[in-house]
Amino acid sequence: MKQQPASIRKKVVARYAIIGLCCGLAVLAAPFAANAVSDWSKAREQATLEKRYGRVAEYPEALKRVEAIEAESGASSAPPWAGRYSMGDGLTNNAVYLAPKSGVVATWSSDTLAFDAEAGTVEMRPDGSLHLAFDHPREPVLLYTDFVPVRWGAYRYLIAVEEMPAFLHDINRNEVPSVGMGTGRYLVATGVRNGKAEDRQALPAAYEGWVREKAATATVLAVRSDDAPKFEPPYFACAKWQATLAVARADALHAGEVLDAEGPDRNMLLLVLDRVDGEHASGRILMKGECDGTQPVPAAGWVFTTGAYDPAAARR
Image 1 (tube, rainbow, N blue to C red):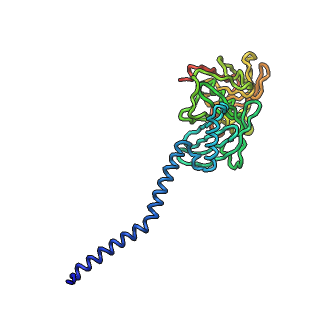
Image 2 (tube, rainbow, N blue to C red):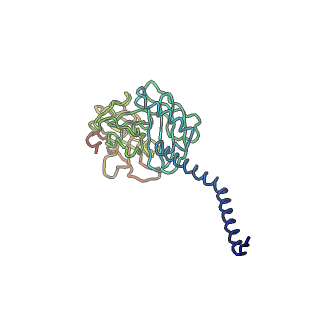
Image 3 (cartoon, rainbow, N blue to C red):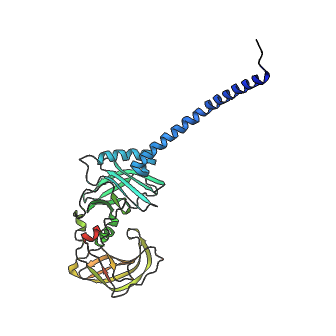
C-alpha cells in the first residue's frame, strides 16, 4: 500500500483534532446552553407573572395568597370591596389584594423595584370598616391598617380611616376620582369601572352631610402659633397654628372637617376643625408640605371654606 505524504497525514491529524476539540467543547457547553434556555424560560415566566400580578410576583409565598384572593374575589358571592387596589406616584407604589377568607397581601414597590410584601387577615367590623392584621409586621408596607370601603362615581376606593376627612375634602374640591393608571394618593380598585361617573354611593353613616352642595365657611377670630409644629401625614401638611373661629350654625360643620383658606396667596393653607359648638369652633391651621416651609401667617378675619361638590366639574 502506498504511503501518504507526511504533509497529508499532518492535515488529516489536524482535522480530526479540530473535530475532537469541537465535540469536546460542545459537551462542555451543553450544560451552559441548557441553563441558558432554562433561565430564559424562567425569565419569560416571571415576566408573564409580573404583567398579570405586578411586583408581588417577586414574592412566591405572597403570590400564592394573591392567587387565592383573586379566585375568591371573582366569585359572585364576594363582597363589593374584595379585589385589588393600588396607589402611588411611580417612585413609591402600593398594591393591596384582599378578600374575606383569603385575607390580604400588601406590596410596596417602585415602577422598577419591589421593596416588600406582607400578608395577613381581614377583619370586617360592624361599622363597615376593615382592619388589616399582618402576620409578620416589620417596617409597615402600609401607613394605616384600618380602612373604609367607599364607592364614589364609577370607582371603588379603600380609604384609611385617618384619611376619610381628607378624601371628603377632595370630593368637595372636585378632585375625586383621582385614578389615572391606578395611581394617586388613595387606594382605588384596579381593572374595575362598574358604574356611571355621575352615580354616587351613600357614604358611611358617620360621614353623612360631609359632602356639600353649598360651601360652608369659618372665620378666624384669633390665632396663635403652635409651640410644637407637627407634620400630619393624612393631609401631607404641617400643623403650625391654633385658631378659634366663628361658624354658622346652619352650616352644620363637623369636627374633623377640612377647609381651605380663601384668597389667591393662601392656597397652601388648610384648616382642620377639632371642635364645633354651635356658632363657635376651634381647630388647627396646617401648611401643606414640610414644617420648614413659609406661608403668610393667618390672622383674625381670614375665611376658610369647605368648597362644594359639583358632579360636572368632578368629571372634567
